[in-house]
Image 1 (cartoon, rainbow, N blue to C red):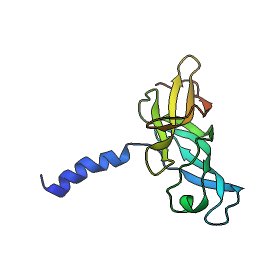
Image 2 (image 1 turned 30 degrees about the horizontal axis):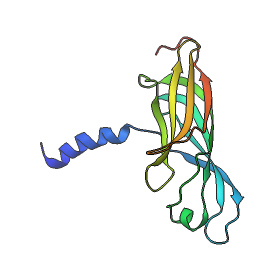
Image 3 (image 1 turned 45 degrees about the vertical axis):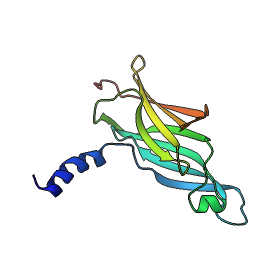
Amino acid sequence: MKPYAFACAVLIPLLAVGAAIAEEIGSVSTVFKMVGANDKIVVEAFDDPKVTGVTCYLSRAKTGGIKGSFGVAEDTADASIACRQVGPIHVVESLKDGDVVFKKDTSLLFKTLQVVRFHDRKRDVLVYLVYSDKIIDGSPKNSVSAVAMEKGWKP
């Protein structure tokens, strides 16, 4: 097998796997900074990559100032999530509890904001949890949202 064909065969499937990409909906300034960008609350939307018809809206803190302008500031762990059915729900792949649906670095190193999905089988509901983790000390700050599955769907 030629090297470029091998690379394509290995790398393309890896690119397809992973968390969703967020689209910024808007933002508001929370703290004025004389130099650099203001501190903000950013609202982003992303679609669940394994469940069509579900979109999550995430609000999160974004640090400004000089460090924030250069992308080296550490954002706080403050975040909130609201997930909604926006179309017919269809499960594209099998779901595993704790799957990462969305992930964003919130510091230059070691800190991420993550959204994970769980399936409450008793109530037939998808539960989305947003939280921040860090190698040494994560944060207990979190938010949760739920989307009821349509009747008759099969896991």
